[in-house]
Image (cartoon, rainbow, N blue to C red; front, side, top):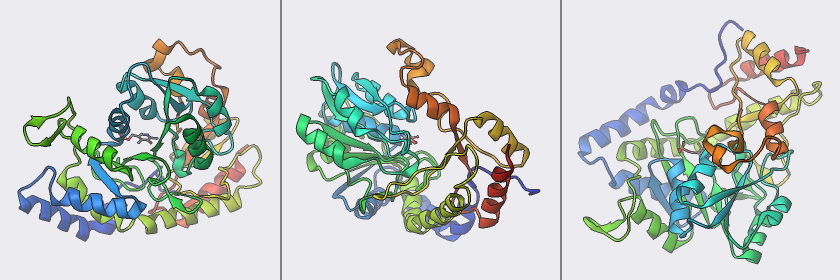
Length: 368
Ligand SMILES: *Cc1c(COP(=O)(O)O)cnc(C)c1O
C-alpha cells in the first residue's frame, strides 16, 4: 500500500457531512447566541431519546461529566469509588477531583472490562460507587454490578466515553446504571469538532444537580446555591453533534463490518489475541484492540508497512507519575500491566474501506 493507513481518518467525516455541518455552523453564527441556548436543549433531548433515558445534560467534556455526577451524588473526602485498573486516566481523575479515593480493581482479561467478582472483594464500608468503563466500545458486564449496588447500597456510574450506541443485553449504554458520563471528544464514535461531553440519567434529582453544577452552581442567573463549575456544552458543538448523531448508527454499523472482517480472517494467526465479544454485547468498536507478546515489534513492523497504530494505554493509571502518591508498586495489578504491555489498536473507523482492512490482515498474517 503506497498510502499511509491512518489510525483514524479525521478528515472524511467533514467531507461526508459538509453541507449539513456548514448549515449548522451558519445557523449558530447567525443566531447571535453561543452558550446554553436552543441547540444545546435540542441536542440534550435528542441524545436522551437516543439512549432511551429521561435526561441529558450537555457539558464541556467527558471528564467533567464523570466528575459532576460524583459531586452531585455528594461523593468526596473519605469516600471510595471502585474503578478499573486498566482505563484511561480520566476515570481515576474524576474521582480524585472530588477528594474521594479511586480503588482499582482488575478487569477480566477476555473482555478488558471490570470483573464483578473482584469488585465485591474490594467493597469496604467507605465504598460509595462503582465506575465501570465500557472500554473500547464493549459494554461492561452490568447486571452483576447492579446487583452488588443493590446489596451494598452503591451508585453505579457508567464511563460511557467510548460507548455511544453500545448495547448490553439489548439495552443502550447511558441507560445501564444510575448515571452515565459521555465524552464527545473528536475521536470518539460520536465526536464533536472540539471538546464536549454529557451526563445521561433517569434520575431527575441528579439531573437537576448536574445542570446547576455545570453553570456556576446557579439555577437562576446570579443566584448561586453551591460553589459550582463552568462546564457547559456550547451551541456550536451542540449543533454539530445534532448533525452527527443522525449518522451514529450507520457509522457504528460500518465499523462493525470492518470488525467482522478482522475477526473472521485473523482467528488463526499465531500468538495474536483478538477481542472477545460475549454473547450479550453489541460493541461499537471504538477501538479494535489486538494483543501480541511482541507488541512493540509488531507495532514497528506495521509502521514500516505504512499502517498507523496506537496503544490503549501504555501506562496503567497506578504506574503513572500522576498517581505516585498512592504508592502502588509495580506488579500490583498484573492484568492491567499485561494489557498495557501487549495491547495494540489497529486502524478502525467509519471512513476506512475493506481494501485497507484486507491489506492489514495480510500484513498481520505475514508477521513473524
Ligand atoms: C475520552 C475518555 C474520557 C474523557 O473524555 P474527555 O471528553 O476527553 O474529557 C473518559 N473516560 C474514557 C474511558 C475516555 O476514553
